[in-house]
Image 1 (cartoon, rainbow, N blue to C red):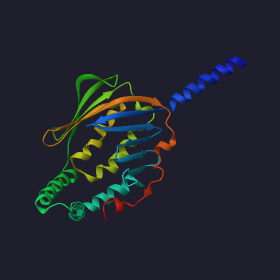
Image 2: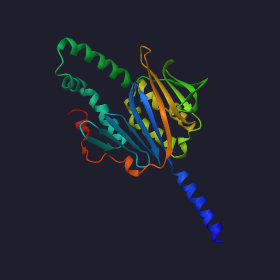
Image 3: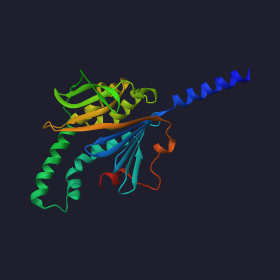
Image 4: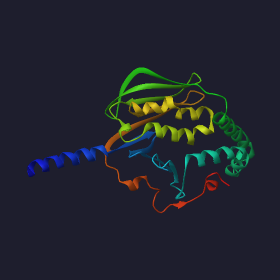
Length: 255
């Protein structure tokens, strides 16, 4: 009897640890090393100069500046509302950022920024389509399938999905999608279309181990995952970085 109970306990412990295991992805983006951590409805993205944390359960965002050792934490609605307001102050913000640049260089650069912001925040409707291309490849040891994402009939992104990596077991994709649309979607424009339900739903199929982004000129930017791990991630990994100073949204937007 004791042997049977011990055996069941071992099975239960194994099933429990497996159920709460998270995913860690290490990727290369144009020579820059980045990592993703996903577990218990939390996502952490870390690049050399910044960190983003999404807590889906609490509907909270965290942005950390690794160079200045600062962070902001709040809701997606707070961020998007403030960002939308600050578009009206774009000239002032750009002038502050470009103060040391000669006027001959500053003016064309400002025009370029204005055009990018106009496209990103345009209120005109966009049409998003996701197409299974049928193409496949192997990335980081996993078989992946290519899906093409078009916005207003223009190719904007490829996602190469690994069906064997089911992040939906530890991430509520529907709630995460709603969070992303609040955070990014209210800004409008074509870039926000990448958080549309059609695109977010790809996470139900698996995780993209390769992403290819296209700009207006057709330039391709490739992100490839180079390492995949499934393991228990400590909860502290999803907290604001220790020793960082908390700042306000006004500080983020340069006021």
